[in-house]
Length: 325
Image (cartoon, rainbow, N blue to C red; front, side):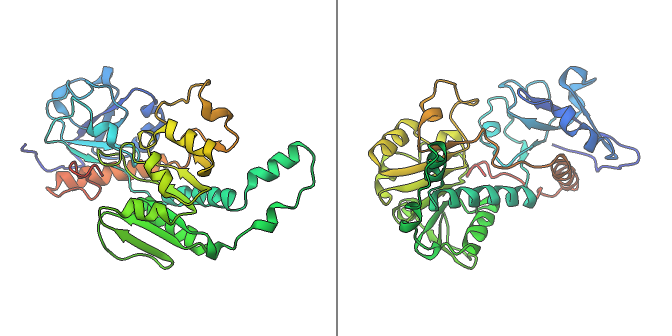
């Protein structure tokens, strides 16, 4: 596709908001309003679909891209891009970019660390005691020091590395399953290779999942993986809903193989009110709010990707469609 170089003072690059679940113009319009050379429309307000060159998206409809024959960049407003990559109307040649936000990663790391402490200190026992007005100090008697509690990590991208550094700084040994060998952070041991996930799970007293969703990671949190973990280990699931085989987790919890679980993402969202996760005594539920990125961070990511692409460069945040991240 041939494109003219952008001249911010004279040319305008036009884009469109595409989303089925959020009001993207309301969320990002104010931050984008001051960007020279850019103009975004709601789909119904697009004057000429052939002039649309980029889209800001989250969970677009299956036919969302059909109306825009010259689109060449799709910016996802978050780190997860699996839904966009599977979209049947996404043209083959379109560049897909995502947000790399260090502040978002820091928020995620704090959330993960809180749940590590929750499971390490068996905080659910204290809540139960409070409900029954019981002064019970037996939980502390079985407490292991952090140095004896291994935290495993599935996923070692920006989010995963930030979580790993945070948890390691608290004194927990961290094992990170990675596809390839490479440098790791202090207190973090990388485990690579085809069996890395199973190896890490087998040594993890607390296992954190922050993987992207791909064909290889779908249903990765399953009965076989739970059986490989130490008896009574905890799961912190922050990745994508389809990673988890929900029936397998319930069975592992009921058998005591998994001692507790913190779940932030689900196969169906919102989680149905009659789902057994809601009432399970060893599950902590949050409504897909482990982290968030700011409108300004999304705006900065979009503008940077547009400028890079318009200059003939590969945008820094480009998603590899083969690996899915």
